Image (tube, rainbow, N blue to C red):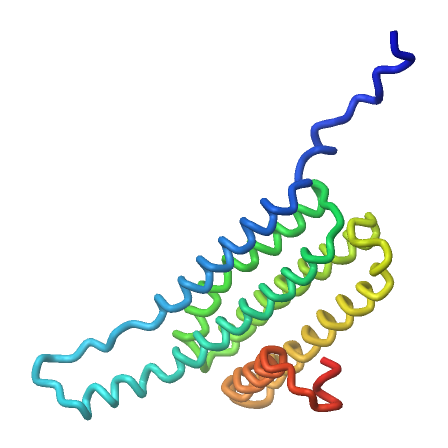
Amino acid sequence: MSQTRGIQRRYNELAGTNLERLAGISDGIFSVGMTLLVLGLTVPMLSSRSTDSDLWQALLKLGPSVLIYTLSFMTLGIFWVGQGTQLGRLARSNRNYAWLQLTFLFAVTLVPFSTALLAHFPTLRVALVEYWLNIVLLGGMLLAAAEYGLRAHLFQETESPELARLFRGRILIAQSLYAFATALSLFFPTWVSITLIVLVQLNYVLAPRIPFLHRF
């Protein structure tokens, strides 16, 4: 007879430990969210007697919506890369980390709504602030997952000190830039804020090797 039958484990110790399933649902939600964005771009309604000039004018009116769509696609792309970077450094997962990531994915599902709201009311500060709050939720939950993962020793041990610096720096600097851009709407038209957010996004997408910008 064995001396011990081992310590009984609880269900919650087994839940949320499959990294492949976490990555799978993340990719699925991101792909659906990115696809839903384009539904905000509607084909212009013109009469059968419309000319090329009429169609061109109608397409020009879609300009703001195209800009907001592009902005949101970059937003989701940046956070998809950011989340993938974090998941890729994990050695293991647990239930709490999985739910933090699911809350992050909840914020991802809100982006199509935030995009539609801003596209319909690009000159209204409330629509811009709502869009910014969506970005805050995205960044906040990704940072919360990273911080928990570091404390729970879920990441590869040899990389933890460096990961802490990189994750915190990346997210906090980005969120500060988004907050600054949104705050400008208190003094300037909302298009100034939207343009600045687009430029911030382009910096993260292109990652130019400019000494000052490359640090971000």
